[in-house]
Length: 65
Image (cartoon, rainbow, N blue to C red):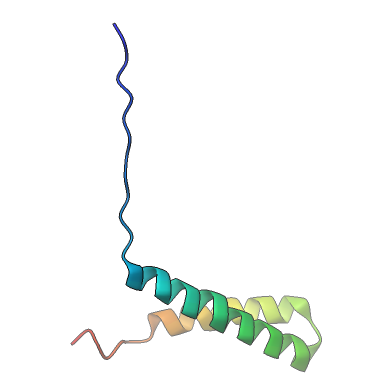
């Protein structure tokens, strides 16, 4: 008896992709390089961009009323 293969499809909204690109990629990179220039430390830049990006994500949104 043959085993049936299953294929799983995931659907991702376009707004989720835009939010990821804008928030994580662009904002995170900007914060990283700003902190790196100010402090001359890659570690501080990395940790600062990580903390700031997560902080921005957790801020209450005005859309969710």
